[in-house]
Image (tube, rainbow, N blue to C red; front, top):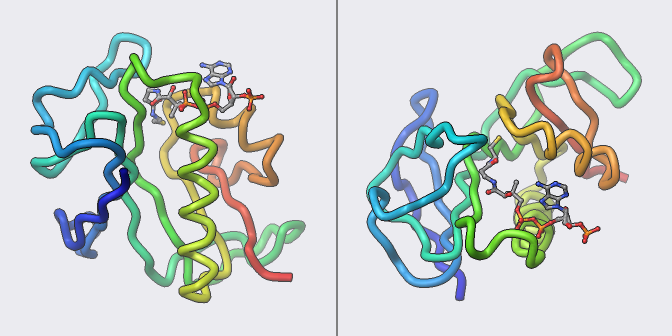
Length: 146
Ligand SMILES: CC(C)(COP(=O)(O)OP(=O)(O)OC[C@H]1O[C@@H](n2cnc3c(N)ncnc32)[C@H](O)[C@@H]1OP(=O)(O)O)[C@@H](O)C(=O)NCCC(=O)NCCS
């Protein structure tokens, strides 16, 4: 089950939508962590399976796949995400990213980014799925255009 909580909180002064998987659950009940560190989870409600936060905004990203120059482009940004430990390795992340890419495409975003990555697994995953690191290996980005 998927629910979208619109304008759940603000990040960079922009409204953030939260996609929750499973039943609604209070944030303090979440067991998501990254190598023993708690994830800095904002908002009040999450999902019993996991959550994905996103905002759509004109964002400074590399102009094209190959270029070193940067320009502002309409981008779906994912600042925080997590799958609860008991639901990991069951494909929820992959399926959710496909859904987010679809939403981004429908909203005419040029690209989708996962930001300020603390889990190195996401770079390995990104490499397999068309995401390229940028901003000194802190973010990964996929262009959605033709
Ligand atoms: C990173 C995370 C979102 C992955 O979610 P998930 O639902 O377990 O991922 P999936 O089951 O969709 O896995 C996708 C693929 O990666 C593999 N995989 C998943 N976690 C992996 C890991 N830690 N190491 C290696 N491979 C992994 C899966 O086997 C799968 O590969 P396959 O399609 O070839 O079988 C989840 O582990 C998590 O929430 N971690 C803690 C919070 C976190 O790191 N958030 C990101 C903040 S930067």
